[in-house]
Image 1 (cartoon, rainbow, N blue to C red):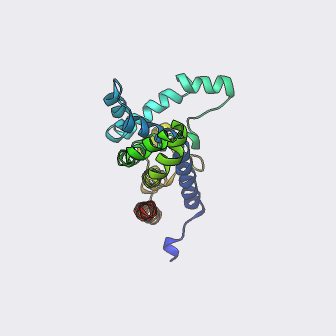
Image 2 (image 1 turned 90 degrees about the horizontal axis):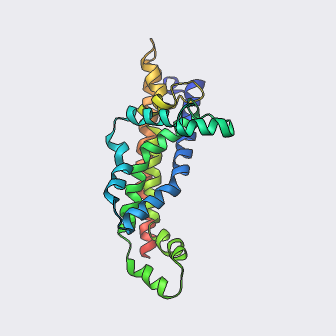
Image 3 (image 1 turned 120 degrees about the vertical axis):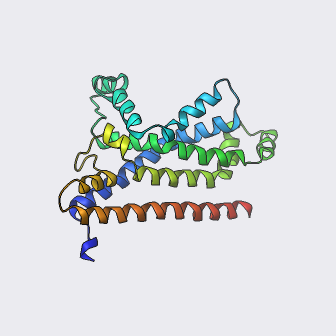
Length: 232
């Protein structure tokens, strides 16, 4: 059991990973729901291009995504420079950068899960609510959103699991700073690069696998439970 006991540094990496993943999912969820609704319910010129841009992080090398974020949010970048000059906020090389990188990489999975759920909703229920005088906003909040709750939940958990495993974009955009941006994957990478780090690498590998499997199982079980409730 001692071999599986985490050191203070490893516990710090675990806590930071959970923190980064939580904020990555929480911050991107409203935009994820909006994008999923747009792709599922609206036809407009350039829809295929928008869909491609949303899902591009799935096919791009993560390092490319990280570099784009670095250029955008760096001190001389269009967003980073404005944040620094106007508000004194620095994004790069902080845990916030790690959260943004994780959010961008996990965003396509979230959007896809929610979109598929929205496409399966009976549009007749929404139309019936409108004929009773409900506004589009009220229909969405009281009819559409509860019906797609299983998809939203599945998207959130999948995005959380993906955020926990993010490496390439994070190390490029946020670097590998102990206590600040060194999440579980980065801590595992660091352990493999130092002599005698095999035990630490094994522990972090086991933790990463357990967290990922738990997230996937929880996503499936909770989605099934919510679907049963919705069906009565």
